[in-house]
Structure formats: structure tokens, C-alpha cells
Image 1: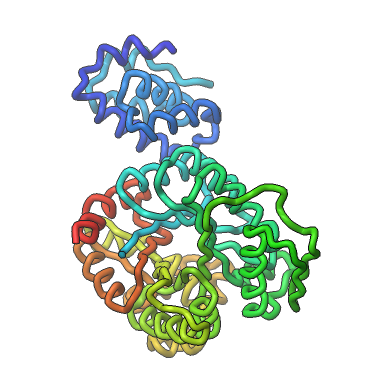
Image 2: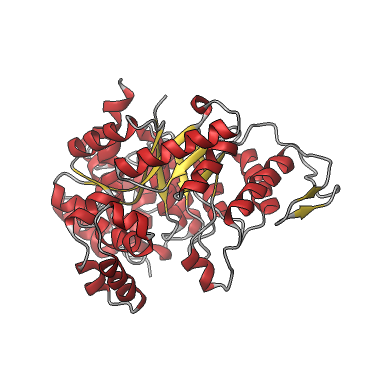
Length: 93
Length: 333
């Protein structure tokens, strides 16, 4: 998981907000079917435990939005001023 | 006791429906109902995944029908689901809708008899009854039984709208899913269920009576009302003359909507839905408005309120709004 180190650098207070926004993107994404089912199930695992804002939860969420809606994810990162994460973020083709 | 449920139509990817289901559990909803239509994701696959990611919430088909799914298969499905969600399974069954059945060339023959026999068969199968069953609509031989045990009670809810089906629900169901939203319609329905319970020699108080509503909540009324328009168009188009008459909707207006829907003239069909129709066939508004309307429904004698489609302009937002602003009002009572 390439995003884990970047997630660590996000202030804890902002992780909740980032997770919230990324979930909105995931739920509205047109390409949601591109998210591998194993990754979707991992996200549900963290959601069930209310740990989507944890390091592991956010890392998996970023991986998933890289499939579902990278542009939406960029917009969220930009809005939250997460420049480093934005630079590191790559769409998954 | 008052309980609150939510309906999901599995039109979306499995993980989205499951996400919403987990969200509902986190917020304190009591039940999840998944619709059963051949053109959406399979109801039991959806329920099995949801069961895997939830712990407490009750869940089941809402509703399946015995014309497309034989009752032995419904029994098998809910019994299998019970292994994943022990003691949490509920089973909604109704006659189905004619439009969907028509699409696959199936006639809705003898709906009362068919639902009655289906409920009997489901119960017998779950109980692993050894005898044969000889109904007018279904027949099972003495050997047609599970080779596994079901330890939990699985309540059967009958989806009903018309007076005869409502009475049947009162007579033989563990619960009823009343397919209506307006207090007058719900009140009439509860009376029929009560009559059915009396006919069956049962105590009305033992029954779980749910208003299975078309529902939408949002922070402002206009945003809440907009998503219900297509749903209300379909309800008006499918309503019998007695129901239209009760809500002062001219038959020709309903016929026009039905024709436009059939011709896929969505703009015309949805444009013909007026404010009064929305108030007749949906519970929608701000959280405060919804609380008021739900309070009125509970006064009719229902015990269970189900938020059905469309839920709101954003599904996630609506579940949060209901869970955080509406549910606490009732749960704290």
C-alpha cells in the first residue's frame, strides 16, 4: 500500500473528514464497479468497525477511490489542502 | 414497542447497499428489508453479504413472492440466511406486483390462496414437518424437507394493501407490511388486520404491524419532496379506483400517468404528479415534519415504521438525517 506513509502524515483531526468525503465520492462514483470486490470487502470490514478514518481504513479507501473516481478524490484532497497526498495520488487504470 | 426499519432496493453495487445497511445498524435502525425483483441484484445474495457485516439488525426479504419463487425455496433461503444471522431473520412475502409478473408471463392467480399456502409451507419447512402438504396451489410430499435444522423462530410478515390480503395477514402472519403512507390508508389497513386477527382467534397485540412507506427526508422540504415524485407517479398509476377516489385523484389523471409511464414519457408522467398526490402516497419533509407524520401513523396502531424508497436526495445523507434527527425522538420515549 503506497498511501500508508502519506496517511500517517495527515493530522488525526483531518482523517475523519477525509474519510467522510472519500466515502461520499465512493458512493456517488460512476465507476464504482471498477473497485475490486476484495478491496470493497476490506472497506466494509473497516466500516463495520467504524475505523474508516484509521490509517488502514484510509489507506484502503484511497486505493478504492483511485479505481472509482480519481478526479473526485483529487477534488477532495484539494479542498482539504492535502497537497502532499494529492501529489502522491495516482489513478488506477 | 416501536421499531424502525429501512428498505433497500438492490439496484446498486453490493458494497454500496451493504455500506448503507451497516450505516443503518450503527444509527440504531431495527430492521432491513431488501426488495425482491428479478431485474435487480438477488435478494438473498444481498442479504447474505449484509448479514456478514452486521451484528444486531434484523433482516429479510421485503417482499418476496410465491409466483416467481416457490415457497420451499423461500423457506430454504431464509433458513440458510439464519445460519449467518442467527435469530435476526425476518421474512416478508406478498403476492408481488402484476407489472413485474407480466414481464415474465406469470399470472397472479388466486393471490390470497397462494400467499396463505406459501406461509403454511414456509412454516412447515422450517419446522421440518414430516407430513405431506396438499394445498390447492402447492403440494409437497412427505420427503420434501430440509436435511438441516433451524433453531430460531423466523417471523413471517405479509405484504398487503387490499382489505382481503390485510385480513389474511392479521389471521396468519406474524406481522404485516402495510404498503401505504397516508394515515387514513394505514388506519383502514390496521382495522382490517384487526378483523383478520379476530377471525384467526389471535391477539392483535402479538402482531408486528409495519407501515411500509415511500419516504424521503432532507434538511429542507423542497429537497425532500423532489425525489418522491417518480415513486408517487408509479403508485398513482398502480392504485385501484377505490384508493384514487379516497384521495380525490381523478381516474383519468391516473390513467394519463400510467400511459405516460408505459410510453416512457417520464417528463409528462412525473410532471403530472401534484403536491396532493405526494402527500397521499409518501412521507416526506424535514426531520421535524417527518417526526410529526410518523407520530400520527403510530397513533393508528402500527408498531413498526419502515422508510422505503427513495429515502432522500442522497441515500447516505437521508439515513444519517433519519438516524440522528428522527430516530432519537422515538427511541428516547
